[in-house]
Image (cartoon, rainbow, N blue to C red; front, top):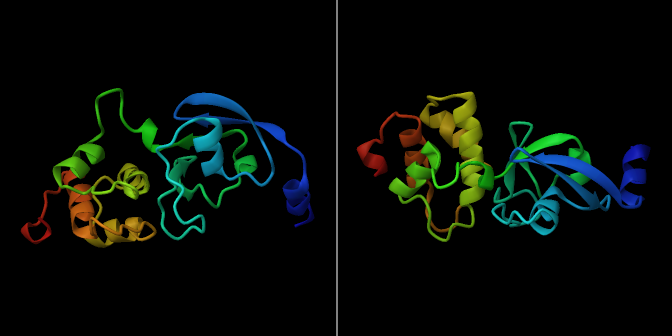
Length: 170
């Protein structure tokens, strides 16, 4: 605990973060969150800074391959770690299966929650290529959508996993 409080009150320091396969060395203050560093210092604005309280999930990224809320993650804690953001999903113009499924299923409206939803869904599908409906709902439960509704998003995850979409979900 003492080390943590010293980190929070300390001076700026340079950290190294691998983001989407590219190494970045950035100077951060101990209080900087990962979402601030991604958006303001690295210039990747796909990750959204929503509620800043870890409630909405819009800031979800993959940290060492696992979903993490970048608004609650201190950048200094990410020194030497790998981060994957929504910008790291597509390969140039070629979108991933989950991105295509979101488009096909109309699982986007305002798009604010979409990056976080995509990252949570990506983590799920990389861990479990054929998730059940309850597993999909569990994986997405930390992500809030205020305009699309969840049926289209769940349908997109099912489509991306090659399971087809139930008529009730269309």
